[in-house]
Length: 151
Image 1: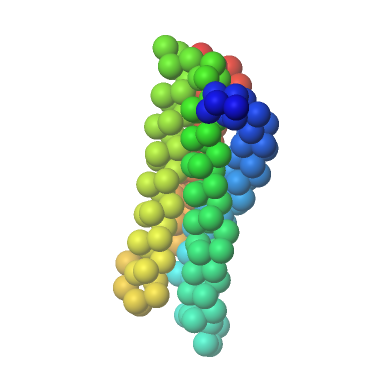
Image 2: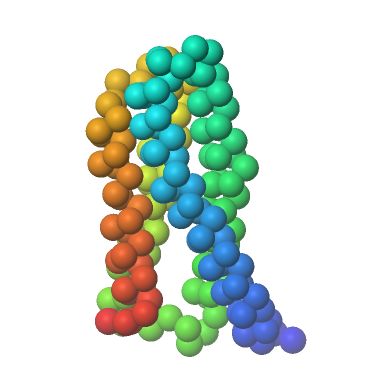
């Protein structure tokens, strides 16, 4: 069995794994900014809650988001390498790819914000985190439209 045959053989598994990982990744990308809103707006009101917020954010990043992002990239890479799946002369793989890079950047931005929270150095408001919570939604819309309509 050569590499092309192997890629075709594992394609349905890679695609299934990719979908599941993306769902998990997106859940984290939606939830972590919301946790930051609560961290900013509620932590000062509830005694001894700061370490709880930091722990929740850390576990979400490390146990769900990071592994889901890595599996999304790996499974997506297998699909991209499968011959005949992607028409690189179309716009859709490029718009999807740029959006995935945007989501990856957003995750790293969230990680940097988490580190600021953990160090007690957050300077952003709950309103700012609410606005940033729209970033993954916009990127998801571009990705889904790109993949479904393949323009």
